[in-house]
Amino acid sequence: MKRNSNKLLVSLLLAWLVMPAHAEEQPVSWSELSDQQQSLLARHQENWNEMPVTRQQKLLRGSERWLKMDSDERAEARRRFERWQNLDEVERERLRNNYETFRELSPAEQRRLMNNYRRFKRLEPDAQRDLRKRWRDLTPEQRMRVRDQMRRVSPQQRRKLLRDRVRLDRRGPLGN
Image (cartoon, rainbow, N blue to C red; front, side, top):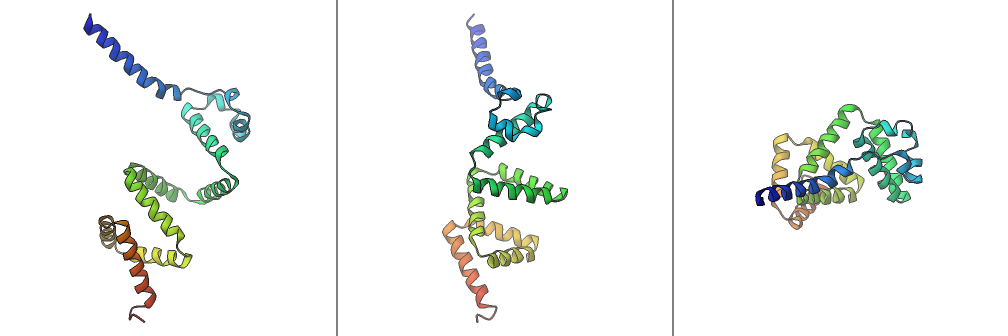
């Protein structure tokens, strides 16, 4: 008897744990959307109820994000979308792969990469161009060594190394 009640308890717990994830994947009828969401998603109205649930959920999440954005964020999102639309399929696939690789990183590694990206974006355009060129000019082996070296040093040491390298580059090869 006790064994059966334990099995029942375990089954109920498992069902309870699975239920919220499953409930999230339920289809949403068009009439359940807010007026703002319906306005944003109007072009999907005709086929909304036949649309796969995963597609509905993706569109709903996107509409919720959009509605929370201010005008500057929306303008930036439009620019990014336009850039995406102008990419060829090979470049889109490369970006998708990079995104998946990023998502598989630990939160600490993701933060480190995002901080590096923000620091790069704060550089003057000429400095960004120079860094890109220098990176492209490296062999794959050299790139791997640079990555390994940068992972081993603290953020403060990394900034100092980069500042020193920029100073040396500005003086030229003879230190002028």
